[in-house]
Image (cartoon, rainbow, N blue to C red; front, side):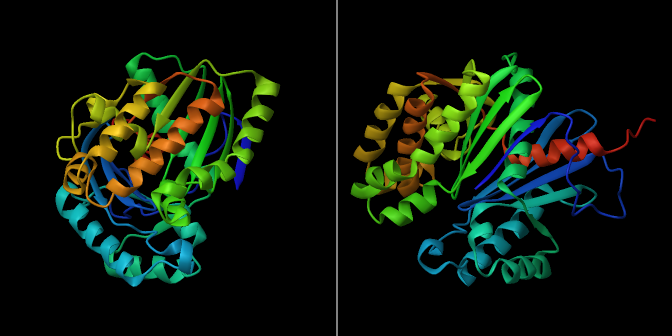
Length: 332
């Protein structure tokens, strides 16, 4: 579990994966290898626009809870996905930062996994802390909130991932964050079946409650509740009438979700056939989103909010934005 409280002027972390032949490229790529999904995005630093993106379910954490290791089959899927991402969005001439999070933090064989990925793809993934994950995610979300015209002086951001959940309190120029080992993949694996998900989840909530109480006692309750990552964006997409194939993050950004809507869409998911669920939320995600909705709903209750603003941008966007911010201007 990682946490931090700091001023906004903290120095950025060391950049990796930059191409030595194009040190001042106007293109930046952020890659996020999570517990379930590999996501990449390309940003034009001159215009500030995201010009290409890629996402594929790779199930990195399959079997991790039982074995403590990332399987060879999972690495095969990651390697294949990186190759596909190169073809889809084009890595040539761009500066790249590739990061990975909770699944690799937990894995006993993390070093050999990262070595194999680098040898077979040329991409060196940086295993980042929960603190760094929260910082980059906050950068992306805060940037998007400003573009949407939303208030950014006081909010709580939750990032519900496959292997961890980050709670990030933002107060003017101060940020307080903690990463908790509670994610949709690991919760589902630990529970073993749908009937036990709620029971296992309840046992994991006390540390989150304690952290929220501690921060709010010292700094007050934030004004708005913001959420990012797969579960919130999936529910928002369902509300907007989209499925996995027609998903559009630009439409999802800024969507407001009421707490009671979570129960509505959970019931809809559970009433679907397996094929219908896969069409709605994606192959390899249908058995996880339901667990994610329970985590999401528990956070509404824990934080005392009835409404949430959903933001599609997250870790990969934050990595790309920071690469752009650190690049010298090509016009100077």
